[in-house]
Image 1 (cartoon, rainbow, N blue to C red):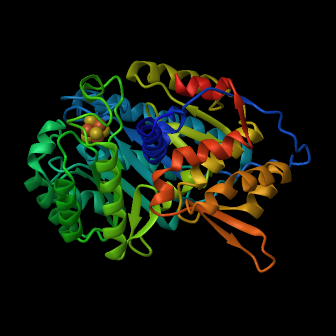
Image 2 (image 1 turned 90 degrees about the vertical axis):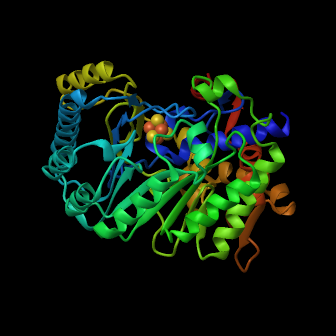
Amino acid sequence: MNSSKTRQLAWTFIHHFTTATTHMTRCKLPMSYEKLEYVNSKVENRSYALPKSVYIHIPFCIRKCFYCDFAVIAGDSSHWYDNYISYIVREIESTLSYFKRKYQKLPDLETVYFGGGTPSLLPTIYIQQILLSLQKYINFASDVELTVEMDPGTFDLSKAREFFALGVNRVSVGVQSFDDTLLQLCGRSHNSKEIYYAWDTLRTAGFTNLSLDLMSGLPNQSLEVFKDSIEKAISLDPEHLSCYDLILEGSTPFGKKYQSGVYPLPSEDEAAAMYIFASCRLRERGFEHYEVSNYGKPKYLSKHNQVYWKNQSYYGFGISATSYTEMKRFSRPRKLLSYFDWVKRLEMQNGEVECPEESLQEQAVDTLILGLRMKQGISIDEFEKQYGQQVSWQVMEAAQPWIESGHILGKYNCNGQLQRIALQDPNGFLLQNSILISLLEKSLWNKSSSKYHKAQS
Ligand code: SF4
């Protein structure tokens, strides 16, 4: 595998796992693998931890950005709002009444995340309907993190205030770049002036926890232009910042037009330079680089996204959304009408989804892939408790050369035993995919796997 391909795949992990619920099952892996016999039969005390997090997918956008392959309905789709929200509410009620019947008491929700799409396009009455339908079945924790993704140009002060009044306490603003030429080239529906207006509006409405998304690796984006966007982002004083490298998806206009690493896309080295600059500059300005693509000020790390990276369970609702409940990971259809049919079937099955539980091995793979995205990495003790001694030893052995080369940071106890492994920032993060492949090949994977082969195709 050449280095360009490796980088492309590494960013594919980063991109898909970070955009999280909606895309968890679309993670692409570089080759096909088959399950190894899972040898440690002593690990069998599997218990369900009930979800404390919810993801809701709102698919409507003003227009479709040229790099985007999310499940999106672009253009004037307001005639769909009533119908779509009614199906989300039906799905919530069917799912949560199933869980309530089965477990009686459901744990309080700690995070609720409205993603998309562009949730801020919706009149807030619809967001309220969804929140009320959740609250019919589950209490919200007193410190619940309630996030809505909002794009510049899709709300004004009165709408921002309405969101705030509903209890939304975190907003993720889709900025991508402060360069108007780039915004236009990407097909974004807003310009840089609207970014500043959106930001001021949210602060005026009372929001004290704002996140901002940027992109690197865009066509014609030089290191200087990227640096300028980072500086302008810093000047807005966000509590949190995500910075994703462009992933070329074959189905998108960019995927058809450009080739990774080939002009006008930045070269491998230029893209790495952007990553290293962002990491160094943002850390210098007091952000914690707590996940491959995410930075937060102390106390402002995204609680919701950490649920995914810690491989914990969560509910998902809406088209294309993924759920991870009772150890079943499944996604809904990406098309509206198929989703409506899916909800009707769910109701006929009294809210129960028929889907196989993930094997212990699949969970171990996910835990490794997701856990190594985080700065804190993976506790060897916990990994061993969950997945057994043999596989844990294999992972430690496979990590050794990367510890020696300085790409993995190993933390040892006073007896010299390895306690935790984490990727070094930024060199380990940059080689994330190669490192993961080597760890998995020596512990949990074998060639020609059904599940991972499917994910790749
Ligand atoms: S606004 Fe976001 S979800 Fe909508 S098309 Fe653009 S990138 Fe995709």
